[in-house]
Length: 91
Image (cartoon, rainbow, N blue to C red; front, side, top):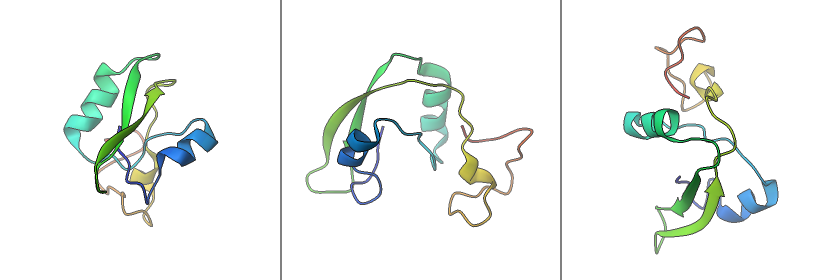
């Protein structure tokens, strides 16, 4: 799982204790999260747009099938006009 250090750093996840992954707009990543991850899976947390890019932590999947609310928010940069609440494209 990837996040940029200036957007959501590893240290913030340690403080929060849990989070949801939103804004994913890559079909392959979405499919892996939706179809292949199961509760209890361990996943790597990495920062990619920094020097040096690195794995910075280990997380556990604690929930599944979360619909990304940003796809319906017209003010979000992740808004998807083709996605509908009855048939969401991003989860």
